[in-house]
Structures are given as C-alpha cells and as structure tokens.
Amino acid sequence: MSAAARKDRKLSDHLKALSTAAILKRAEKVMGSIVRPLETHHSPLSELPPNPQSVEIDLEETLESSPWSIANADRVPPRPEDLWMEYQSVRDQSVILAVDTSLSMTGEKLALTAVALAVVLLQFPEDRVGILAFENEPRVLKRPSEKITVDEFVGRFLNVPAQGYTHLESGMRAAILLLREASVAGSRRPPSTVLVTDGKYTAGKDPSYLAGRFPHLIVLKMGRERASLPLCEEIAKKGRGSLREVDDLDVLPAAMYDIVKDLLRGTPSRV
Image (cartoon, rainbow, N blue to C red; front, side, top):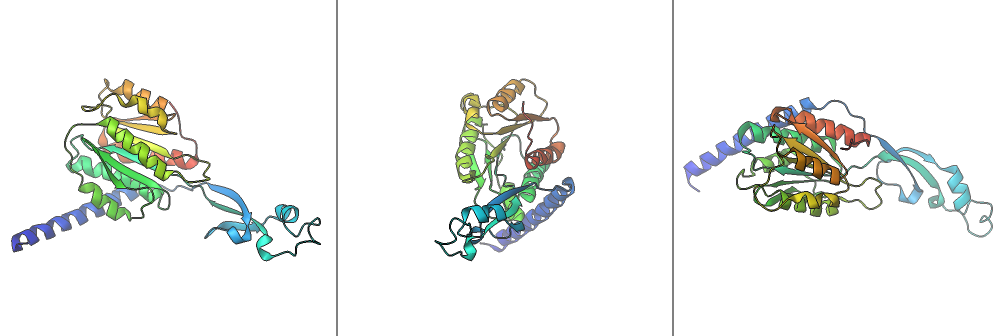
C-alpha cells in the first residue's frame, strides 16, 4: 500500500470513528429510562442460572417434590441440590431488524438509520438481536447469537453500499431465516421482527405472501408515499403486528424507541 493510500485509509478510519461516536451519542440522547419487566422462575438449586435476581427458597415445591417430603424422607436422603428455588430474571426479547438500504441511504439518512438501529442494540444488550440490510440482495450485518459492541455494529452498517433495486421479497425471506436463529428454546415470547421500508419494490414479486410466516411483524413505513401504504398494511396485518408510519427520516430514531418500549412492556400494538 502506497503512502498516499495509507494516508487516505487513516483519514477514512478517523472519519468513521467520529461518525460512530456521534451516532451513539444521538442514540443515547433519544433513549429515556426503561425498566425491563421481570419473569418469575422455579428451578432446583443446582440449575440456577448465572446472576439470578430475588432468589428465595420455594418451600412448597421443595417439601412436595423433593426427598425432604414426608413421603420420601425414609427412602431417599435429602441433598442440597434438592432444594427448589424461586427467582426472577429479565424477560428475554429476541428481535430481527430488516432494513431497506436502497432508499438513497447516504449521508444524513444513513446516519439516522444507524441511530435507530443503535437504539435497539443499546436496549437489548444481552438479547438475541439479528440485523440485515437489503437492496438487490440481503446482507446479514449481525446474527442473533453474535456478541459485538454497538460501536462495531455501527461501523459495519456505515460500510453497507446503498445501491441497486429494492428486492423486498428477498429481504423478508432472509429475515425469516434469521428468525429461526433468534428463537430461544422454552421462551414464552416469540421473536419480533421490525421491517423498515417504504413499501415499494422494484425486484421480485409481491412479498405479502411471506408475512404470515412471521410470529410478530412490525412494519415501519418510511416516507410520505401513499401508493405503497396498502401493501404495508397487508404485510403488518398478516404478520400479526402493527404498522408505524414515519414521514420524515429525522424522527426514525424516536419511532424505533417507541417500538422498543412496546416490546419491553410486552404489549405491542396491532393493526
């Protein structure tokens, strides 16, 4: 690599670092205080997960189901692991984000979309969050099981080229594949998907037939174009979710934050 090329690369990296820092600062400014709901669980002492909250002995379960019960006292000696415990943990929330990046995603538009995605990652630091961008074809930016910092993700997103046709069908197909990775065995809450699109497609066919494969699909419609509204409504309805309209991209981060709040409360609105 020539000296000039190294200089350009260094400048590019510096500008990206500045952009990432500005994006995270704005994302943190958008967010308010959210208390995540807790779920109550019961398990033997030996099967307690790491860092449980409000741990107490479940006396009723211990006396009825363990060797400490009167019925079993003479046959099986009690062991410490036979203690049953009651504890709480933060309710898990798996989310898939599918973002149309064919919408002239450059400059401020790209940065505002990055802010909106950073809001989700900041609110779900330990949850299974998958993110993909699509235009001609889908591009997975973060797999649900992958652990990366928000800074790392923003850097990846800023490198996504904004070009090509809008293949909404392939974007939704890719989101369905990520849903399988996001599902958590034993979870009472299925993964939610947020589809960020203007509702128009210039490649593939009408993707509404795919919507029924999503357990919960929120459509975040961008722009003031009304002709694509019926398709967005149909996708949200078939996906058992809701439709949110964002006329101007500068309010996208706040709209995403509202979606996050609904998901955390466990009461997402429907169409």
